[in-house]
Structure formats: structure tokens, C-alpha cells
View 1: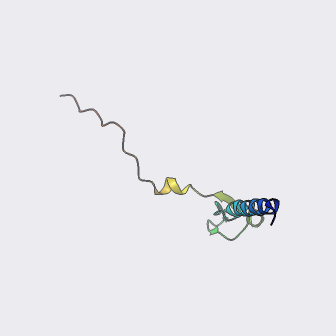
View 2 (view 1 turned 45 degrees about the vertical axis):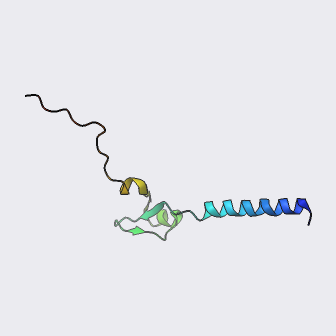
View 3 (view 1 turned 90 degrees about the vertical axis):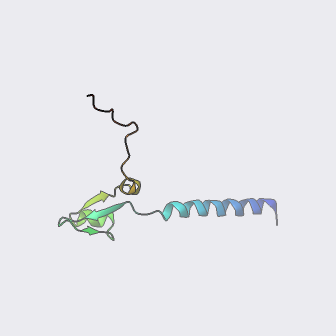
Length: 79
């Protein structure tokens, strides 16, 4: 095998892997219909045709993180 063939094969494998990572990402928008229900299977085009709203999901990190404590304690009351 020639070195050029090996380089091309490595490049093709690398590009295929990076493309698959972008294509398989989680969906971060869902269709909210007029009656308030969510339809996870509709595309943006189908959602707007059904008079729905294409709503973006809240970030997963914000919903799971506990509330942060204040950095400094409150001063003691004066007597």
C-alpha cells in the first residue's frame, strides 16, 4: 500500500467520525402545541404548520444544579 492511500484513509475516517458526532446530537427544541402539550416527534416545519411554537429546552445544567450559597456570610446584627 502506498503512503498516500494510507493518509487518505486516515483522513476519511477522521472526517466521518467528526461528522457523526454533530449529526447524532440531542435535540434541544420541541414543538409546543396550542393546547399546551408537547409533541417531541414533530419537526420545526410540521410544528409551525400545526400552529405550534418551536420552543427551546432549558439547559440541562441549570435545572439540575443546586442553588449556590452566598460567598460571604451575612454580618452579625449590631446590639
